Amino acid sequence: MNHVRFTLEAAEGSVFHINLAWPQAVPPKEGWPVSYILDEKEFWMALRATQGQTSANTIPQDAEGIVVGISVANAAQRHYAYTPLIDRTYAATLQPEGSGGFGFLADLLINEIAPTIEQALPVNPLRRSLCGHSLAGLFVSHYMLTAPISFNRYVISSPSVWWSDFYLLNHASQCLSLRRFHPGAEVYISVGQYEQGLGPADQALPQQQQMRNQQRRQQRRMVDGARELAHALRAYSCFNLYFEVVAEADHGNASATAWRRLFS
Image (tube, rainbow, N blue to C red; front, side, top):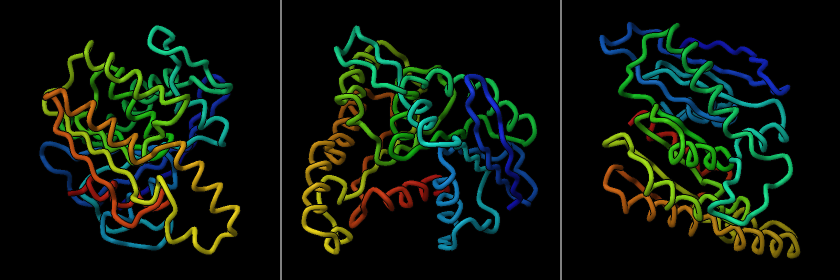
């Protein structure tokens, strides 16, 4: 695949790194499918998933379509950009410090990043995906529920539904009851089997660290939360919904299974 990486300096002092990979082959008549993936680590994991590669940061042979990676410069900007502004109509939860930049990134994605990519390369408008893992999965979930229709597929890996006292789950039913969604939009939600308890990798840790991990994961309810999000969406027939608990996966490697969906 071809590959370029560039930096985008946006408003509010945010810096975004954009990775763009596209096939060397002649594009199909209808254009290539395009997948927008949040976080640079996940961009590289998605490319490796196209052909089962394991080497980090290497470009594989041609995938089916265009893959765009969008990442922020640091953890503080990531937390700000991926988290929603809380609507106090639906929740009494206070806005966590350093959060609430969802609208800024959503606007940047739709009005600047996507048009730049899709003016430069031939894109199939009927095959546009938005993908995110962990906190970025929270962003993708909130985008799907609240933003204007612009994607046909949402790939949501291990979404941080626990954020701000499970705000997303509390807000989801109200959003769903008020909106009309893209008919037949595909939604794939997945989570690792070990994300709500201890897995094999924890066995080598000191006992106190294992206890802390167990307590934090039980509080966050990653598996239950992802399942509850899928259940809420399933109540609305406008989605083609897929839910999967990835066997023998933890939070660090569960997304590899999700990204294989992009090219299946």
